[in-house]
Amino acid sequence: MRCNAAHVWYKARMVRSTTFFHHWARRAGLAALALAVGLTATPARAQSGDAVNGGNITVMGQAKVIPVEVTADSPQLAALMQRAFSVHGAFQVVAGTGAEYTLHFAVTGATSVSASAQPHSGGAAFTTEGSGGTWREAAYRAADALVQKLTGLPGFFAGKIAFVSHRTGQPEIFVSDLLGQEMVQLTNDPAQCMTPRWSPDGSKILYTGYYRTGFPDIILVDVRARTRRTFAGYNGTNTGGTFSPDGRRVVMVLSFTGTPQLYVSDDEGRHLHALTKNSALKSSPCWSPDGSSIAFSSDPRGSPLLYQISASGGATHSISTYLAGYCAEPSWNPRDPNLIAFMAANGGGFQLGVYNFQTRTANWLTSEPGSGIEPCWTNDGRHIIYTHQEGSHQQLYIVDAISGRTAILTSRDASQVSFVYPAQ
Image 1 (tube, rainbow, N blue to C red):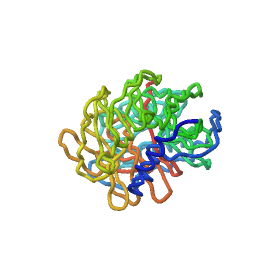
Image 2 (image 1 turned 45 degrees about the vertical axis):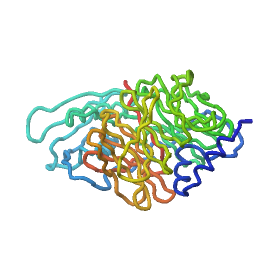
Image 3 (image 1 turned 90 degrees about the horizontal axis):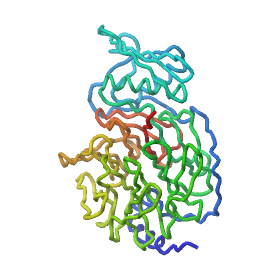
Image 4 (image 1 turned 90 degrees about the vertical axis):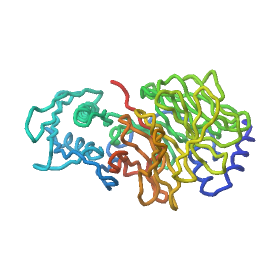
């Protein structure tokens, strides 16, 4: 039987604050579940459109957006593309003469879609074609090319998300495209599972699961082969597994020595290297864009704050956001190493902030009823997908870090999102 001394130590440390315990335990995977072991790796397909309720719901900033008319040669394609551009902070979907561009999409094959952007001010249209495994993926790829042309930043519509949902009655991991189409249930465990994290190529997912032993293990899923194995199952707790930007290393939090420490391994879970040696709690490690540094949450001062350490180890440095005395869940911008998103205490809940290393300042990104937690940048370095929570209800939202515009991605239960933009 696995020794649970470290688990008992964790719980004793975490009950110092009721809010800290409930939030930190859920995110770090430290609440033991005395459930019988049950394992099935057969994915189930969910209904394709049940997670989506697109459209802007609030405007937080004053940045200019591009009004576009979105048309297509079929109602289904038009609806998909209108929904996609409605969640992008740089665009506003309008009709008729108020648009600066007409974006038109046409299916040209079973897995290909053409797209054009015709400026209303005159001039030549920009045309492109996208391809993919399905017509939806082809449409997303074509739309991303239009986004690149009109904004100078890569599009994110063809990205994939992994998230946790209780829609089956148990917390399970699901994967889908950004807008919740062609959703697949990846796990079917009678046990807690949490914090899925994609590999950079979109072929694998790491997550923390209790199904094997009743204690938190890090599980590696091969999404394409539909197989999984234990990546880290040491005595104590194994949480926070996250791939490096090049996919060759994994950072995680392990407590087999009796106290939770950050470790880095290769992509097979071998050659462990300890980065930290202190008694503070640690959670939510994330990599800098170049893989040289790791940011994480820790509580040496009594409540969680943000810290940074070299990926090869050494001294730990605090990230002084000055925004709140409770900061956690860092997410490093994939395009700009100066920016880290995080969640922080705000009033009676939590909101998202962004810290800038260059200016050494932080600003609130969300300000809304309920809480904004669990931020995850998209590949354009401009948008953040996050969990919006009101009471027990959780949905995925997306916010534009430039304009502040926020939109709903999922109308049903979803949280703990991970995003990847796989290459073709």
